[in-house]
Length: 336
Image (cartoon, rainbow, N blue to C red; front, top):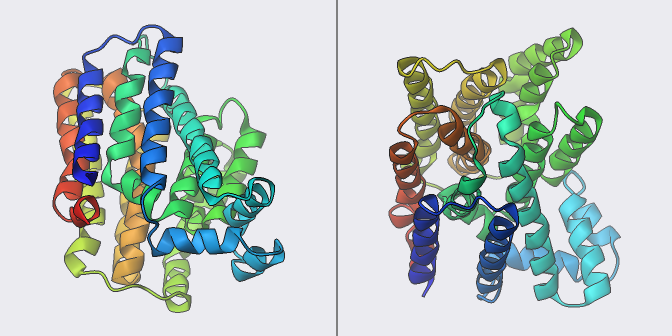
């Protein structure tokens, strides 16, 4: 059942590329209907151990239990506890949590073009295809079903990133919230710092980059790392380096000038993901790689449809890249 459900959304994303969604309202309704179906089908399944932990926390008698048990990352636990105290139903809490996440993902897609710089290309027809392509990509599928806090924090970080130029104060607050949803997002602070284009924040970003190996080493020593094969842990930094290198090579070959913000993202994320792989345990490195790739996917998707020639071919290649691990390394998640 899971594999057919997944393949249906893969087909939905692929078919959506060729449909002209020029009406924003129709596009929103299309995305909303199938996103809610996606959420409902996944939440009606038997919850795994990770999801059970969230449900355990949201059903405690008082809010202090989830906060004190997760003192460094309390935001999502507290939010879900509050929703459960009103609704008294874990399914409703998950559906609302998913609706919030889906909203942020949609806003990220719509506003990502602000990162790319000015372009005359009309991209709204690609919103549904990009949305469902992201949803079925292996980092976001795992985030939606297993690493939910990391998934939620990623969307908050991306939201702060794509709105940083228009609403810097709100974006910085959103970034801080994302860190208290999942602390690992803090390692991407230099991207925010460089994008602010202020000497003070540039200096802070450089200092953070210099001490990031020590911070990663400290994180590795204070948290347990689940057992994951070295091949799976290695998949992420090399996949990230490969895709970022291809983006830079294609932009040079097509004589496309990438702005400073995109250059920072394309250089910093491979650096920090490789560093994490070298210094963290395999399980921690896999989770960090998921986070890094999740940040890249929406940005690269918008970059392809707004800047590059042969966008349909590149989109097909990118979709293949994003689903291949789900049909190979993580195929058990679609069968069990």
